[in-house]
Length: 570
Image 1 (cartoon, rainbow, N blue to C red):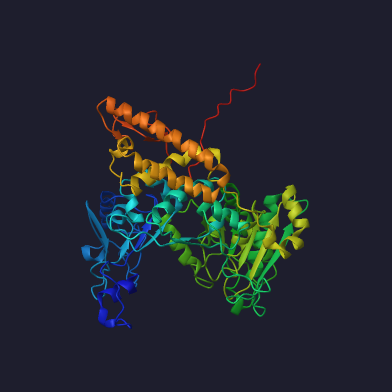
Image 2 (cartoon, rainbow, N blue to C red):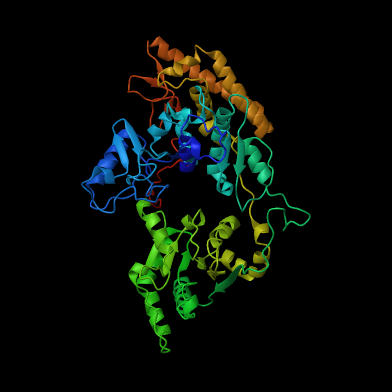
């Protein structure tokens, strides 16, 4: 984006003199939750002021360096010069700039991370998470990201890691997608959707239900499934080696300590030119409880085991506490890039990591070239997770070695151990099909009304907080929104089209009754609560007033309830 913006501002430096890059700025935006970036200018201004008071400022605004010249956005240590802090903030504005005066983007960087800034000036390229979809029903200005009002609508949608959109999450996302893609194609031209995944089965059914269209596989296979015009197997390079371990007659904890110690010990005995190849052991866990046990063992049991192995006169590998790290949701966001940078440090650097205990956080998007040794503690529930996790090692120069540790007391682990060779010779054949049912009855009860609200609020311009009562004044817009949703269901899941149409009619009737009641009380009908005396149609799950319980995040799709154990009956 910086390169495009640079060329847009300097026509004389373009290789094609007749190339017209327009008058609108090229920019990139990040649309994620408030835990990652501030949602408002006020919140961003407060955060920036706190950064200026800190002894060691952090990358609280995600962008840590200038993408054009590499200069740090925030200084390493507290500075008295405001120009050393690459953010300009006020209660009503926010922008990045490069602190280096010689940089071409010393004036302003084309990067936007504050929600209010994204709505004021929608970027050319928007990075976001599906969690934000639910906010479209609540946010008055969020629809500006999807065009309208003279702005271009999105023409390309890229969905990474499609296989993760399955189960309750994928089901809820699929229903919100119906409204979002309808907004993108409001003028009749639908966007191109590109979804990437390496582990999926029955993709046609999943794509049909989520995106309402057929799927085209790229690259398509040729006469041989292993060869296409774009790719073919590399027979010369080594791949990954999988080794299965199951300790009979030992507890899982004791066997884990012995296996971890053996891997660390033997990696330290490699020739000096290969010492760093397998220096870092990645221990993959399926729960934070199991990970906690490993970290506890790494402070006592594993170092003791290493000492016992080092009695051959060749020295003992030390497992110092700083060399044991964890990559989980417990790690603060600001620490994550520092840990990833540290993982790039190899032996003999004092910062090199010897043992990395992690959960499935590793399997999504982590690419550290020097990692080549993994201990998989137990068999994951899904084959897709197993493939994704184990593919994080051996991605570059050094072949990967994956040691799958099975618990002898678990029947499922024992079964995988007994069929280890067969399973790994046909690994991708065992990938489970994705389960996505956006138009099932529970899904419709949870979010169908939100899709209707999104189309009316952002498609027909009912964005104002007090414009929910327009359901009585503009029946044509309501009818159009209903038709758009029904037409989508006809493409995605034709068997439930009539049921969805009937439910939409009930939702509209309930909405109109609420609007009539508000007018009889000489008040307006609001989208969300504006006080105890107002009527509104969207409400939180823990509130009484309001018409429909509405999600704030597509991840909070399951209800929670308290259970009281009263004890045995006498």
